[in-house]
Image 1 (spheres, rainbow over the protein chains, first blue to last red):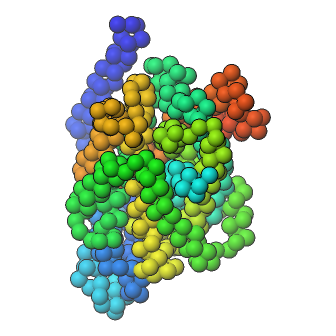
Image 2 (image 1 turned 45 degrees about the vertical axis):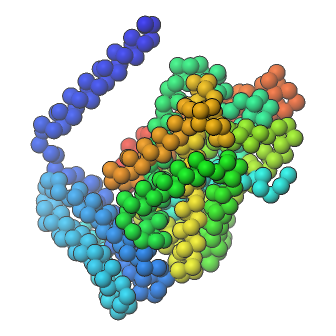
Image 3 (image 1 turned 120 degrees about the horizontal axis):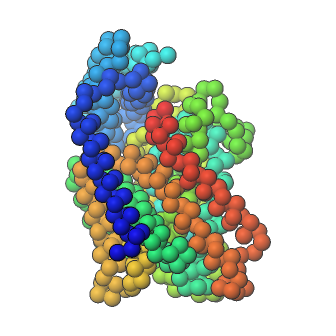
Length: 147
Length: 410
């Protein structure tokens, strides 16, 4: 075995041990409170999802997309909202407890509306109401974003 | 030269420029920076045209593909590092395409996501298994032309053409856009996505697969220029469509389905369905390209027989490699990982291996002893070295930018 290969093996073993140690350390320590910047990123992403959901509702109401697309796109947006909402489960930033709770509620409401799309997509009036509701959620979320 | 002869370039370019992540990344670029990233497409497209032409010419003259040259140029150890890195990037990219195919099939025919993933992977395996190489690039290249609908979409959404023209020159982001770090992240990501290494591995191996000889050098030139320029035009159309549909509206596209909204806005259900068919072909082509590019790289690196049209028993490692790549893509995608996130990582990490892909091609194409009268001319040589410098800069900046911008989240 050459010196290069021995050095490579030693480096690989050290990196694996270091990585394992880091993971054990992470698992054993209390989760850090969410930073305000991270909260801002989450809220912006949720607001973007709300705007997009409103846009989709308008296209469905106008008959501009097929049924399979309407159903699957709503489902995927709903999954994205659910995944993003999970990030709000970290301890909130100091003084930001109410904002985090409110963002979670808005996200849940948005998810419920998206889940209802397959049932109501044939009804233009309901889809227009959904569009307005998503726009309202987007506005509320944008107001929660840290300045 | 027949019209069919340029479909290798079209498939390489469409599969490269409009793969799953590139599609989302490009539309998101328009949504965030309006027309101010258009110049990157021009710069990167000239680069890929230069290097694709060079890699095809080297493959025709030397009869050796890109990865074999890379091994010889960098030595077996460094070559192994590049092989492992580019295979990892290809697995990530292939995984994302398999997830994307499932999503598009859902948009088109409904059904369960996991069932569509299995159906998509089965169709890809059948296509690569049963179609001859030339029919593979013709099929995906031809069907991918449905994406031209985005050019009509871009025009139909009535952009300010003065702003489009100004976007072709480098400009700083405006005050209503994310900051410089995010802009730089998008510049590097877009540049890298257009110059993805698997396009060159696929293209140069494809030239040998199609048994191009010296008489096919004009065909190589036409493939590089028209195929990759078409990819560039499509990318411009995607940025313009993204900007017109989403800029200033609070939407930050990050899902594959969002990329089909502009055609629906412009042409309703018909536009949506044509775009979905085009996207399906493009990301199907990208999955095939990444799987085959890995099979070429592995077999060429280990100096084993390779070739799409060779029988299984004649090139077992090559055939096993593309099958494993597609099945690995299916397996990883089935775990429920976010396909778009995966491919964005793969685009950024691909930048790091870019210089190792392009340098050996440039070195051989510059060597008069090897290339004879087909050696690089002064203009191609100068462009080659300028682009290698740009690629190296992008490679150095990619990972720090990804960390600073939280992978583009801000």
